[in-house]
Length: 610
Image (tube, rainbow, N blue to C red; front, side):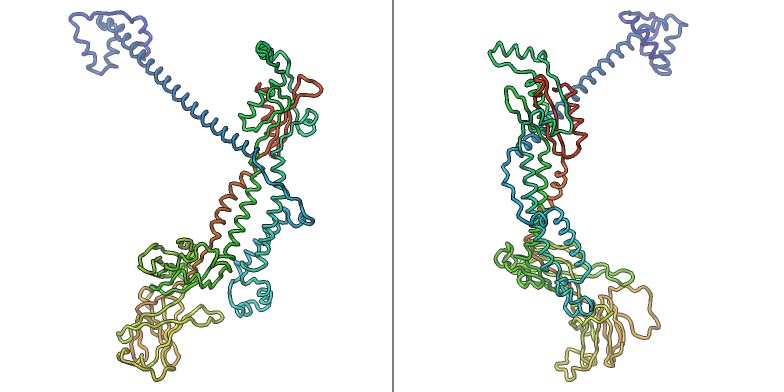
């Protein structure tokens, strides 16, 4: 309220100077007491002449403050307008730059030289078309899924035992190695041929047709366009242009040609590639936009061919091999790839770019471990690997791998694929011994297992290191291992004597009253047998696949090309009417978003561009 009073009284107080009485205190005393608000309110009271004399002075001060505030507001508004103008200019420049790039791409596609389309050969229309390609991809997907559920690479006896009714079909059709069978790769070759035929006989002609410039007459525009717009061009609209050209001695520009020229500039700003029949006096115009959508399907086909080629390269010059390495052991990468135990291309020695690069490289297993679930099932198994120089043993790469997390080094990929039991570290009567384990034949309904045999003469000896010769190699103790937690011990009578528990294996409760011995140490044939460690072995797949970059390139091209292939392709034609020379006819068509394109053309016409 005080501020309103001061502002209202300010105009009357400007330029008025009032001297305070001689007995009055200094003006600074006004600030004492209850502050400025209280002092100003006291000064407005009419009880004393001195207080009445301060009202105009306070009003003048308030007016000056309001004036300064208004100037500050004006400066801020001016700075803000300048910043907005600069931002708008930057955005306009970037938009114009983007439009120029799009127009340059459009013009490049218009001028691109495409090869001649292929002529369909008898029968190719039925076997090498889009429908056939979809069927082929569906069958390939079904076979790939079938290979996921059916065990691959097993022995003939395994399929005869597991699938007695269908084993002959599985082995005859090669479904036991489906990803390298003749059916699988025959379908992929057929798919590649379909893609090439579709590109050469369908997509290439469509792209060349999209490049073709057609100057249509008004009657042709009517026939080709789903919509038609007629614009009258009276002569008065271009009188000034005609007068100026007449003074310069140039030929007159007809009103219709002037409109076509104006429309050309508007369409170019909207990303159209525009062609006219005459630069000086155009009467017909051909414009098109979205050529990228016509070329993108060919890029999709090229991406699919890259993916198929990337899958075929390993069969020709790739190599894949598996190796079991015990904890602390190592294997030469080059030797493993040379063996090609899983697959090896016939041209591996000639065409594989990695051939010979791994001859001096070895992989070492620093540690192998298995994590178990609460119910005893395996959750995951891990291998800590080191890639070393075979000559200097200098580490190049260190990494821990597990299922679905491989190690990649220099063009080779190492996968975690299997596991096993390599050896046992035991104490027999406090003497350390190492017992190697061997895989046992798998029985129906049982898990994999590994076994070892310790002669009875070693078991009963007080010091096993003093035994130099075994006289009875058929009598002894049998050790059976099914996991990395427990070891089953069978005595000389072939009965289960006890179960050795690994020191790192968890024990939920103390097992008392068991009919057999259980623990880290048990008594066997009068001797103490203690388990120190179960050492596993990791099963690795080492693969050299030169086709992987092609697959990555194919998918990197496939995703954007698929999105670009749905861009609408639009064509616009303008022609001077055959019946009325002072009228132009506008028409066009689009393969997608037809209503939006028609509304865009109407907007251009109603905006006054024509």
